[in-house]
Image (cartoon, rainbow, N blue to C red):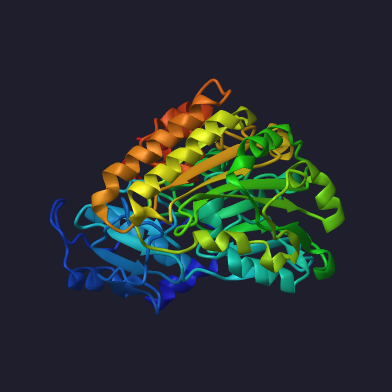
Length: 489
């Protein structure tokens, strides 16, 4: 079908009615074989695309609650995504879209016939002539964006972990250590190409399909697949593209003073700070307390900004000036795929910086790991952001992300290999989440979708945006084809 692909790819911004000629292979409830899928779908994909039954090439960050597809479709064009979804629709097959497989919630429910559409092969980055914007494809890695931007004397707002797919991290809202300057990650996106539930490829922005534009910027997995996006970039010479950051550890007797200092800390637009509890193993078998401050500027200004933290007398201090290409070094410890990680998240106000609460959480993590030493890689991470810019942008630009004014996002990550620990790990995660919520000053529970476990109410995930999103879901996906990630229907 080269002439068809030529026509489709030649007008990528148009609405495309896709492939009515794809045959129906069976009635609902009957699973195709690999040969069926290859014959019926494979011949309509662009050269280089493959179909298999092996998940070796699509590892997940967490094996707990991970989707278990019958078939993996590895695509290498945006049209392939639309073609595959159109095929699934015709044959009543469930599907899920994956780039790097970092989503950990347990809302996946692929059946024995389900397809996983792997978009990691869509990874091109193209800069505008003035380097103030770039078009990135749906499978683009954060790490690739960092090095591409640095080589072009510009930078993107990026998440901390460089192993993430940028759009997967962004379309649920998107946390970034430069939030104080640029807003959240979804604010960086100025237009997208979106494959809809009907298998159509649309250009979507603030003036084209504006209702979808609102919906996908906070709840995209319920409305379509973003196969490419235009995102902001910020020209910055390499010599100026630096930040001060690093791991600073404290002894456990400093915990209460540290938490109080975090409560008292006034975050400037150039600041962000994380708190990490991790287990140091034998011979001490204790929880290590680490803060990872971030400051966009030089060391002397950074040390003044974080003076209230530094004066507490840290055990070690690894903070230093680093170039843009090393901003994500801290997050590398969270990039290891595999094992079981039934994570629990919570999004909270600064009231959560309550010393007694964090002492209880600290003690609970230590007790959990000492009782289950197989879970020694478990951790708790709290990320604290200045939110003024995100709130300001949100007052002028509509998006469905509901928690722009919430400054702290916490995730509890039990980590282990043996599924027999699932019960204990879930009990610990839920208990730690409840402790943290108990100190929060917000009226309603809220959880950033990319940190959520899967047992939350839809109100806790989508906040005040929920009623409008549910109306739009019925309009744009009445058959609930996008139903794997905190489904609205």
